[in-house]
Image (cartoon, rainbow, N blue to C red; front, side, top):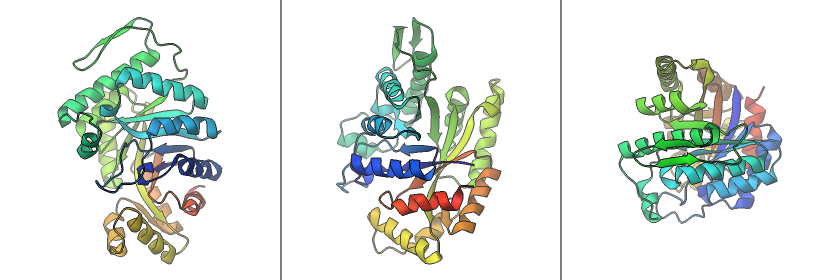
Length: 313
């Protein structure tokens, strides 16, 4: 199993705090560091600081040395595909070729409203996502003069210089809905599932294999991954303490930590070494090749180091 660290900087993290956790992850041996792409904090009214995803990834590209870097995921509604292709390619070059880009249809309508960003219906956003994926691949790998005629965006005789070589890996994220699976099979280097336990992963990855076969793609050519919440400790007491700290960090201090943990236990990695490794083995048996460990305690650097200590072979 391969492991990446995934963080949510809209929890109020400054760039220096994001850098500190990325450096901790790099030192601990994680293969990649991902961050969410949100312009505002939430729930609405939380009022916490939130930095731009790709501006901070550009900084990390220069301030880290080995670790892979990426977004999980950048909503298609936030960025015009052609401009986004140039932005990602630039950060990729700055990093020495370490960028992966996760894209999705977006979901937080209140956040869009706060920043004056249009938020069309689900079908339209997924249509836009399909066009974005085609444009990213076409601009990065297509020939000079490549063109594209979509309902939302058109490209005329493209000249994209310099082309990233190798191009950034494309990740399609989602919850395993049929159309997102088909888009992953057609365009992505990796299909990432969110909020899914091992049983849901097994079913979604089976659908992915079928979708690849339908279009003549080798199912083994696409990486299968899952983003999983994680709360681990050296002892049960430490796990409970971290669960309580997590609840406080997301704005629900004093909530029943035990009930909160039990509700998430079927799909999260929760517990001490044996329980955590057992859950990882279940995801592996379901077909996952990489786990993005979603860390909702980003200022607890010992938690990051402990993930590596408990889970890495």
